[in-house]
Length: 338
Image 1 (cartoon, helix red, strand yellow):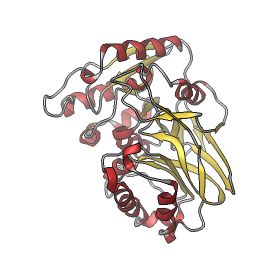
Image 2: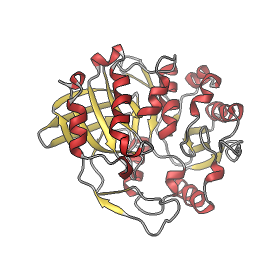
Image 3: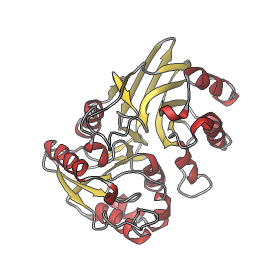
Image 4: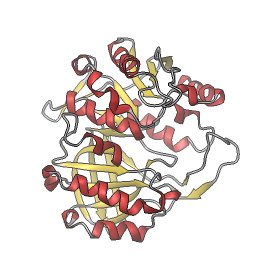
């Protein structure tokens, strides 16, 4: 059964249980880029949760230049996964760059009639937020199928995956003990872990609201389209990768400013910033400087250093789900339900 919450506004898909089928699809980059060891570990991890793993028809298709399947085939796999009554959750293979190509080929009415878990991050932000905007279905920013192929340092990620998809209760997000920004998919054994200093407060405050967000530059691709979710009265969860390198501060600033210029931003309730990759060359001082230059952020709680983004591990959060944020002094309490 699907739970209708908050006055019937949003649909929350059913939780998973042993025996449920999970469909893996590749709406962004192809599964062809994954190594055999990664796929083996990922499948075995999911099966250890009692889940059956199946794959979309076109997950291995890969254009030689884009390393993605055709627009039509990627949309077909997504629509088929929602249509199949045996499938209870959909995991994306990995991120990439071109998920927005399939937006107009998605059958949103079909999704409304067959709501189920949809999970991924990075480029998948565009699909998670568009599906939520068009259907009211709560979707999820969380591990890809490929993430389950990480041999070491996955415990935290798995813990929060299970909290989100196997348990009904609201849960508190605490920081991981350590994190990594290494190329684990190339070398599974020689990992580089960093002690996690945890989340920190930039603007104090107490708030609660529904969540919108994910990868900032990808979310911004939806601005001005029918697929952009309403950010009014929302708590924004935002992160970005290190592609901008040493100019990350300026790049993130202008992307955030683009959101701030939306009329709905005046009623945004809070901001949670994900952890940065090392190549971003960001510091706590730079984050504070960025936030304090935005008068629009005055009066709302802002925290940074949360465990989501393009480092590992990450927690899963619901796009359209609910969050409660308490940020006072050095104390942070972040509760999530979705």
